[in-house]
Image (cartoon, rainbow, N blue to C red; front, side, top):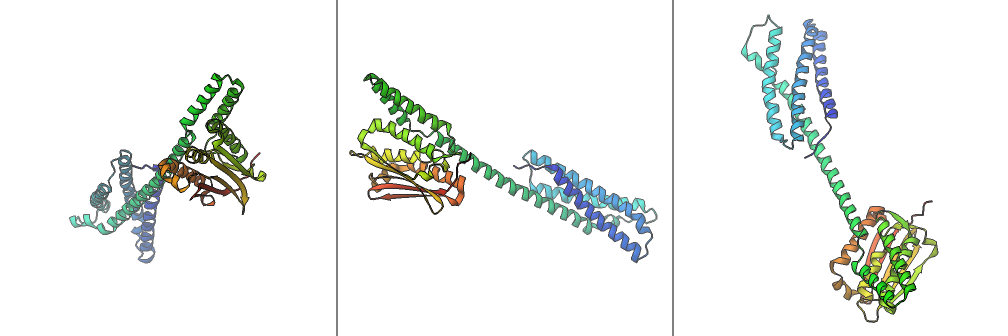
Length: 352
């Protein structure tokens, strides 16, 4: 259930009854000027007292409904019924008030129902406006809640991506370090440990919702590939096609690493002869174009990929949309021999 601030609503409430009182003033003034009813100005004060009483009664109804809303127990039908009951009680009391003030008038019980239609109309209009306000607040609350939940889901997805490192990769890398130590290749083990620490540091310290220079992302991928090279040897071949003039542009952190990881998992690891991964980056038509391509099984790899790669690609697409909206795009193409992922995003210059 939603909630809203009571002060703005009370201001609107008072404004409504001030408008009603303004109509009363206009009516009594016309009676005085046109029909020369001298008592009209005398009754003006009583009319103000009557409208003030209506404002207090409806104000109490407003505060009651606010209490019910805060208790998550508000029902519009209860509010409408209560408003009707208050009208039926208020109108006879108001007429009795006028009878007491006008002592010379003979008492007639039917007078207690005088102006029932006009007074009921005022209450009806007030009730309709109040319910319209409630419905509008509900709509805004649902929109705000939907937006908040959407942002929360995106944050959770980004956090999941941040910790998306393949545990098998980390396990294999540590095993490789241990194997190098057992072979007394201490310098190689030290170098590999430093590479692993460098890559893990970048992966865990770079928030996926931040922008980093393409050069930093490529440096982390180089370290990642060097570690994978220890495992796959000559099966893993890399072809870099990065224009130097785009290396300083900004991209979302950890944007390319999942694509390289997929290429290793579904192209290099699944083929006896391995595969070549091509990582390209260039500027085209005012946009930064990034590509990760392999010459692996292509279309045949899609059945093997299942949901794991699909989730990763969906995360990348959502992150691009979060940062750049419709200005960025992700295109996936499975060829007969190979797999290509192309990303286009607006050029973002590095800030000092």
